[in-house]
Structures are given as structure tokens and as C-alpha cells.
View 1 (tube, helix red, strand yellow):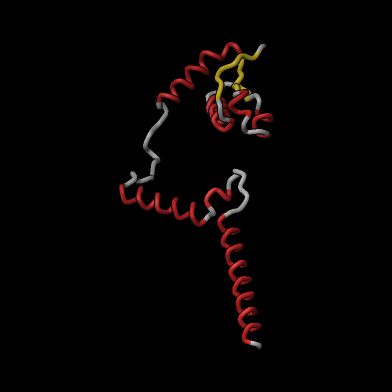
View 2 (cartoon, one colour):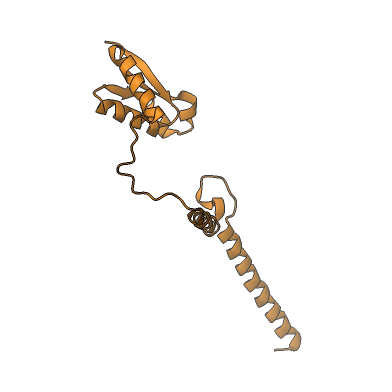
Length: 145
């Protein structure tokens, strides 16, 4: 039996979740392009990740995914999270800003940077110690020590 595309996703994890959801409902599917998109994540948007299934189960699978997207399977029974308060949002923003500043800004990401803030601070410290040493040596030489 031939395989037919059931859905296409731009994120491999979202595709894996959808595949697990369909498998829990008895629909056998496979996720394609997993290797290419996990080796090079930029390929996820270019290729897309497809879920393939048997032709006789396509309509049922698409209907289940549509129901899941509309929230038909959602419930609040086991939701133990409290709603966010304005104070909690402010605290979260402060923690995020502190983490950004303390974590060298974009230093921990894959963005190319020549020097990170900690490196700049170290260079300034080394330069000021060297400058003070040279200044003290010069003063001592001029005074005849």
C-alpha cells in the first residue's frame, strides 16, 4: 500500500508530537526528512517535515489533527499552573534581563562575535594594570629610585 502525505510541519518536534498523537489513536505514520532537518536545522523551513500514512487512513488522520488543533482534546483537569499575575510577569522580565546581562548578552548563542563583554572587561583590567605599572615605573625612574 502506498504512503500519502497527511500533514506537513516546519518543526521536527511538532511533527513528532503529531505522529505520536496519531499513533496513540491507532494510525500508523512515519515522519520524513528527520535526518536532514536535525543535522541542519535551517533545512526545516526549506524542506518541511512530512507525516506519511496509509492512503485508507488519511481522512481519519487529518480529521484528528484538525480536532487537536481546534482544542477538542484539551482539558483543565490536571492543570496545576496558577495564572500569571502582573507581578509574576514583571519578576519574569527582570530575571530575563538579569540573565541576559549576566550571561554576556548574545555571547552564549551561535551569533558570531569578536569579543564578549567578559573578555572586554578582562582586556580593560589587564590594560589598566599594565598602564599603572608603567606609570609607577616612570615616576620611580624620574625621582631616581
